Amino acid sequence: MGILNVTPDSFFDGGAYFGCGRAVLRARQMMEEGADIIDVGGASSRPGAEVVSEGEELRRVIPVVEALKGIPISIDTCNANVARRAVEAGACLINDISGFRNAGMRKLAGEADVDLCVMHMQGTPQNMQINPQYPRGVVQEIMEFFEKQVKLLVAEGVRRERIILDPGIGFGKTPEHNITIIKSIKQFKAFGLRVLIGVSRKSFTGKSLPATLAIHTISMASGADIVRVHDVKEHRQLVNFFDKFSFLATM
Image (cartoon, rainbow, N blue to C red; front, side, top):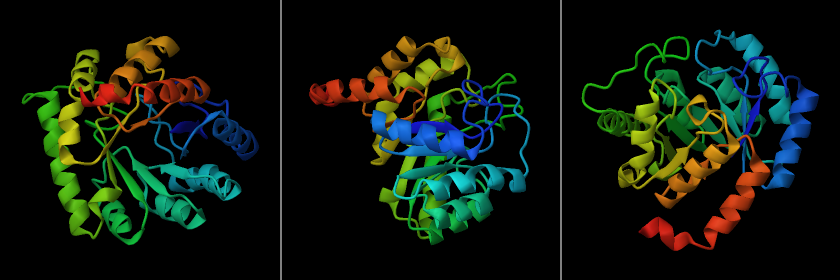
């Protein structure tokens, strides 16, 4: 999954692809480099990010989604109307960092025949890194959250196989929490659903590409199905090579 931030303030590439023309060129470049799907987001989720109005988010993302018809697109949003408009424009996946906590998003999920990514986040981007704590253990609390949200989505008519789980590395977690999550990917696979891991260039890696590649390799060996990345070319090379050793994922 290639990351396309159509924002002026994302933590790693903020502003680089702000604007429809630059965003479309970058999306096409990532597809050429080997991306399977492009994740388009119009509202930064970095720690302390400002809230973006619905109108502004629509203005940023919908022209991009429309211009990329024929390319598999994921819409990265917590807003049900933005998600709906993006699906109408051709998006095939809704990636909700709030984990479909909002009833409107769950209703849309039941109506739209698209894949869904349920991410765990403690708090909001504005406060998530203010002393995050998990009294029952970070993995246990994420597992409980996934169980609850999957049941709610299925109750709305969502087919289980449409659901992808993302434990939300760096979203309301300390570096120690992040490491624990990476060590516990096989537990998240117990739901029988696809698991997405995204550590790309995050601060606990030192925003380092080698560290990102190393952690994503460990994640794939533990059963992760999707990696969400900024550096598509390097990850495509990694995935192609890793596939030759796919027996590792069963160890």
